[in-house]
Length: 268
Length: 290
Image (tube, rainbow over all chains, first blue to last red; front, side, top):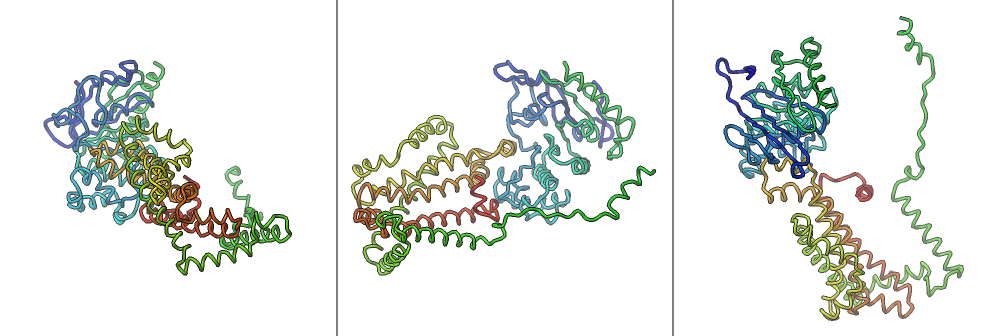
């Protein structure tokens, strides 16, 4: 077992948050193998990415981890308890911000609390939501409707919505891939800052190699048909990462290693 | 170096390349002006056609006759004579028909849009009945409910219920995959998903169905009166037509259209109030976009 980089705790290894053991997913009675024997372990405070070409099953993997779809085989444990459905200790974010136009930014952020625990709980969580909006730079936009937010601002509101229920782990499904590249780089740095500030454990699905390298402690490279993890690569770059690190030779080596693995996977 | 300097040479002593985009003239005229011009032109052609004797006045009355009759009927309505009574009968049929269609339409729409049973088992029958010539049911409604107002309410509701069912069901299906997944991921129950996601998302489609219903409900009530008698405006039109009193038919239709127009206006206003996030600067374009 390779040692994982230790981020905040000195001494003992942080406890594992997620543990996936031999997770497989078949469709059409086993005719299509979407995922085969995926095992991985995510420790407290770590940032992992899974990268692969489209159709390699990485989104299926994320949905299984989130309890949105059941695995066909294998086990998924989160904080020592099996994942058998949606869990309040998981925060999710998708490619689209999916803010609801009939709710203000603040009401959108409070939606998970309102749905789970009712209006009174949402009212009680107001200060927390407001401070989250401040954290992502949306102070002053709390009573604005989403039609007045830009794409990047909408995704920042979606970050707040994910964080408002104080989840133990963040699952991110290509969260910024619908944004333009300049905004996307900026949002990735914002995401890192938020994760470091909160000591968050995060799992990101992406098809951008540089995004995976710049954000992650560990990158899982997936191949398609059947979807499986072909290699797990530790990214040994100091924190906090900066966009300038993309010019470092180590960065280039990580990128080319991953690209080679992906190229091989694509022609298997 | 000279290569890099090259672009600076361009443009410095040249003239601006300003040019004009073509704009259609009609868009420069205010809307109410173009609408009035069209109406005037229409009435003018109408006047010429009748005064030159091209069309028999029994088939098409002159605009003057029609306007005079409009005044007559208007005075009749204001004085509260039999015309007002007839108008009130039709108004009641329209309102009750709409309310019945709304209640049944929304219930069926939720059944079809929200439950698999409704979608798989009920929807095919709704489509099948919708394709039937609904006016042909009028004699049945008269046989079942008599010659009074009830059989007209039934026909009006029957004709206008389908757009409400379809609008409600389509609206409940309108929430996209991302939104559904988000609600699933925050552990929302089916009821919460319905109330906080599907119903708000579906309101625009629901109101589109409601608008169609608000117009067809008047046709339903009048058709019911044509085919089943009664004391409403439809009966007045039928009598006027049988007496070859075409100006009267025209003016009755125009007053009747006010009824349809106000139904449509009420629904549009409700849509404006409830679907505030879907407002556009141009109502016509918003409807055309559906």
